[in-house]
Amino acid sequence: MFDKFHEECGVAGVYANEDAANLVYLSLYALQHRGQEGAGIAVSNRNEIATEKGMGLVADIFSQEKLDRLTGDIAIGHNRYATTGLSELQNTQPITVTINAGVMSLAHNGNIVNADEIKQELVKQGAIFNSSSDTEVVVHLIAKSKKEDLLDSIVTALSQLKGAFSLLLMTNDKLIGVRDPMGMRPLVLGKLKNGYILTSESCALDLIEATMVREIEPGEMVIIDDDGLKSIFPFEKTAPRPCVFEHIYFARPDSFIFGNSVYEVRKRLGVKLAEEDDVEADLVIPVPDSGVVATLGYSEKSGMAFQMGLMRNHYVGRTFIEPSQSIRHFGVKIKLNPVREVIEGKRVVVVDDSIVRGTTSRKIVKMLREAGAKEVHMRISSPPTAFPCFYGIDTPTRKELIASTHTIEETRKYITADSLHYLSIDGLMECVQSYDYCHACFSGAYPTMHHNGD
Image (cartoon, rainbow, N blue to C red; front, side, top):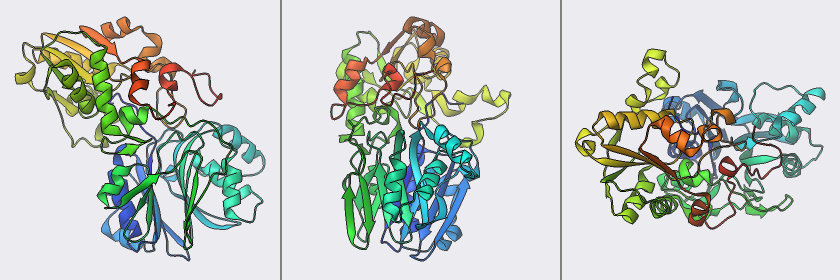
């Protein structure tokens, strides 16, 4: 298995465009990096909502025939990466239900840290759950609210949640977008020639030629219907704490999130990493694709030549996630291959965005030595990841994170590099100045006091 964190999901919703399902499909395509487990699209024709879902990649799930069945001018879609709940079809979103206030469909990016408690309470009261995803808890809370008005029900329900949520809701005639008060996960608003789009990242807007209007604010709820666009701030105010890992790894470099260009931030991380470093080497190479932009910054600042010393095979599907032991042995080689001509006889600096368990870094170092590298110096464009995330990232348990059980020197020995250096937390924070970011995965300082990091 490739030793990386996984984001939990991307969402997209289109309002008042006859091509809604196709536009959502294309947006999910652009957001494929946010989840490859399954995807779904729900469409309203103003009378009823139709849904199509499947397991796997967006392009494999939605045939033209399936998209043709989804007629209507309002649609929402979802890419799933399982963080809570198993990877199975009933956990794929959007979830469409009929409740007192009418029919609605919901898609969610993030993780609700008090979902289990709420679920137990609801089950005691007779609620029936048919999935293990925390999104279904939200649906139940909305359904259970005694409010006549759907918006009031949504606000009442979401006010009970702790954790991260960027949500899209669709009724027969409305599209609603919400970001949790801490604004942990991104959500942007775009304008189409006809209608509006709400989506996780701005790179989806570029693909369908929508113009970015703005980011949805932390704690904001946007309601789009035939009266136009209305914005309210229904939650108790709290200091925004967006997830800094979106900038380090999750978001696509061509996206603009949390007031910053992801590309610019990643490049600054590389510059800062070089500023904090004094290694002497011949060239710097990225671990593709996640390390590329930081490596450009590192190369620029250090004056070391930037080379592509590792090549990535872009056609590796999900086939190799749980293969037999004999194939797993080749796991990293299937994805990455060193370029001997670049590396042989050289002192090489390798830049990556993070080390999770350490197994991949260890294989990369070994691979570079086998290709003739004289020295291998590992450089990481974020601080050591020592704590799990509870806000929508699929992190291993704390004991599996190498930085929580090993010193930097012990980690260096384990991955067999000549030296290992991480970006400092202060250095990281200097590069992302617009907010007081959540950095619990590095510091253990969780913004919701719901977890102690075990």
